[in-house]
Length: 115
Length: 109
Image (cartoon, rainbow over all chains, first blue to last red; front, side, top):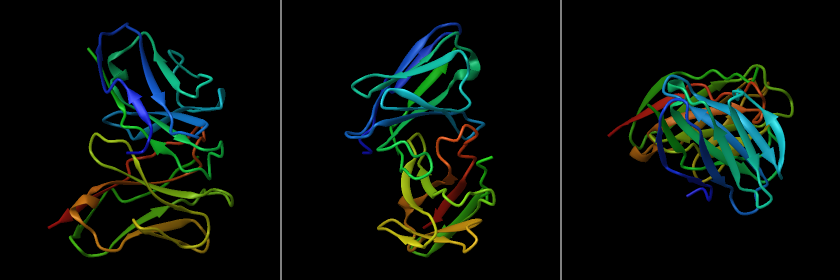
């Protein structure tokens, strides 16, 4: 158990809909990262927040947005969903903001299925 | 680009050592090398990380080449529970970062 929690575990929705994925980091961790893992691709970094502020941005679509709240939990919002958005979405957390040094601890993921 | 190169798959017999290689020729002098592994339908699990020197922990050892352009993850006695996809990564948070496809390790009983 990494200490990172994600809800929901599974999500099934239709094209065009909007969903929100939630992540609670490990106690004491200030950074939260979001990743997408599709069947045909490896883990893709989407975005990082550190203590409420956006820190780094990866391959995140404009239809997706994220935020980190004062209690440090984070939400990833996916809108105008397409079939290709079906994937596993992982959240990770780390103590600091150093992208190169800090170890990241991953949650169990949310499996999103868009029908 | 934060790109690493790993073999797609490897096999090893149970209770034998396993050496998983990784090339990371674009690594900068301050980037740590991280290794993670992922079991089916689970999140990646931290294995080990290092900067320049070889590193050991209870899970594995990490041997880093002197020029830092490659590294090897060493599992000293593979068990069936070590069967997973192993990823070598550097420069977390880089906008171009992707874990790539990693090495799928199969353990033969």
